[in-house]
Length: 278
Image (cartoon, rainbow, N blue to C red):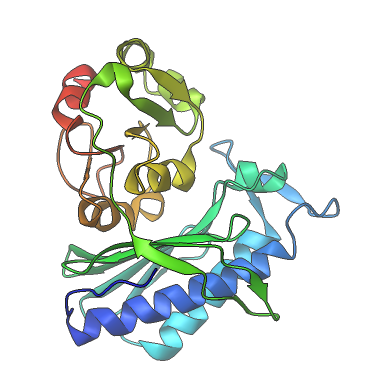
């Protein structure tokens, strides 16, 4: 069901519209390699994985963005930084959840975060294998698109759009707690924090990476925690969660995509979660 939205400034709107378009184009390209047994997988030093589909998708994203906004800065997981002078910065993760992607699990997505002079202004999470997209702009609200179908060689059908809202769960024992990668708790010495939060909440699941943050933003989970997070992983999360009525901060409680850790909640439970993570 379509909904009306507040007016946003023209420069943010132009970038958000391009981000939505190119995320779907990249997602359509990525799907051509999904569940392909011939796909070659490489392991990085940090034990994450990368494929040619990651690199090709980021190239597409980067080239499209810089063609439209040549003076913007672009920061991507696979191809580094293209410096700009406009004050606008794009953060790209072509396939967030590559472990899921290479194993044929559909819980991966393309992430685009957009900042202006250090302020998160817009963000897109596109989940091509699920036909879903969540997007937001500062002061514009957060929207959830479902039912997108692959269409042609370069995109998806429009799907059905509605406003996204976090859940109203107000007690930790009733909350669903998600995380991406258990090894990151071991590596950061935060296993006791994970155990305390698991014990305090009702259900713990590993529906992680961008899918976990999407679940919180759309009211299907209450808590998503990552003790290790790169800026391209976090790029859209602050504006998406806040515009959906929730909270996104570092473990220290700072609303910041550059902090190296991530805590997303429905807002009601945020203080209690941060107390456990101290």
